[in-house]
Length: 170
Image (cartoon, rainbow, N blue to C red):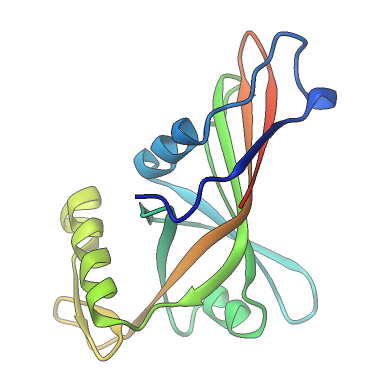
């Protein structure tokens, strides 16, 4: 289910002559299949902070979690604007960049659905219980905050025989 279909644009200055824009449906599938994402946030002094995260692409929204004392949670508490990337580390394939605002999820139904999605995607590595507006690992009382990132803008960088830069505006 899509919240809204984006406007898709190919950036010709950064694309091969034979390039075509990557359809949003292709990007959406890659976002759902990715196992590792990179979250970029901003520290209070303006310096960037980047860390790898596990995430869940569900209903055109990226869900991710963090402990409340972790740097990314502290950064998001002061500046919710962030960027998430995923892709490959070779000059072939599709790299994706999502820009938006991370908003804390406290709704129990959405948290349960996200917890089920994490378990289905990552297995035992990420099994959570839901209570009091947060995730908890089995046997732990440490609260795990859950965020959703709904894209405002996204980019796709196609690499291989042809290079392309696609922008999606939501």
